[in-house]
Image (cartoon, rainbow, N blue to C red; front, side):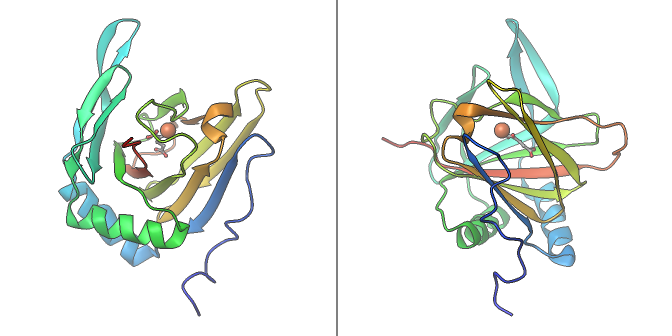
Length: 203
Ligand SMILES: O=C(O)CCC(=O)C(=O)O
Ligand SMILES: [Fe+2]
């Protein structure tokens, strides 16, 4: 069996229009995914995120970390971070993601949700520092969580479950036309780790 035959059909677009989202399903099998989960938990430099909401500085419970090829600056929610150099586990997963998705990435935003109370509100990944329309690959480890898209004009929604060891790719004009979120859920007590491999525009 070749590397790709075990995956879902990543050609299938889960958005009905105005963007492209491909869900590759579980690409990293259970034992290996468990191992990555522990290595990421222990080796990523997790820190609380700062958000500026209505002019107030708020610390999130969710933890984040930002890594890249160079010490890129990345600004979101009016907060600027400098990318840390890749560590072994992130570099391994970056290489694997590039092989599977056929796209190169130069940075990664990592998120740690301690339980279902933590999520991420509606937003699109359209920060000025990101290369326009470049693919963003999202890897999930740990608790399986729902992920939703909402069209900016029509309000149409699309949801799916992000499984342990899975890969999702958002590309083309998705960020222009759709918001996405990770809704909180009372039903989940376990942590989830998410990695989003991205391309910072270096021009
Ligand atoms: O946790 C996720 O699956 C999504 C995270 C996300 O949307 C982001 O970091 O921009
Ligand atoms: Fe996002």
